[in-house]
Length: 69
Image 1 (cartoon, one colour):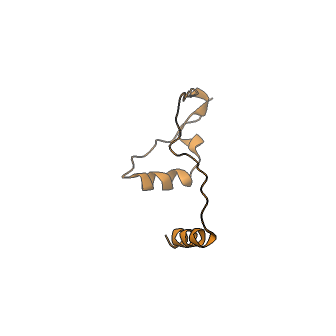
Image 2: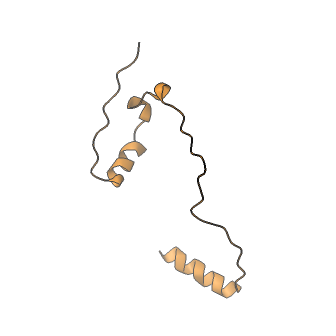
Image 3: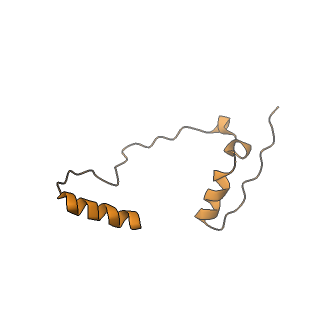
């Protein structure tokens, strides 16, 4: 016996959709037993780590500016 799934509503924007899924269990809307695993091959990172030596004073200023945002 399979339970009836709730219909997924239409969203006006991404913020509304995020708020909806943040407060609900997706298993009430999607039958996860019927899904297929996605293969995401050859994805490239969007950012890259670098090492950078800065004077301590400059680093503190940068951190302070970032925390203000």
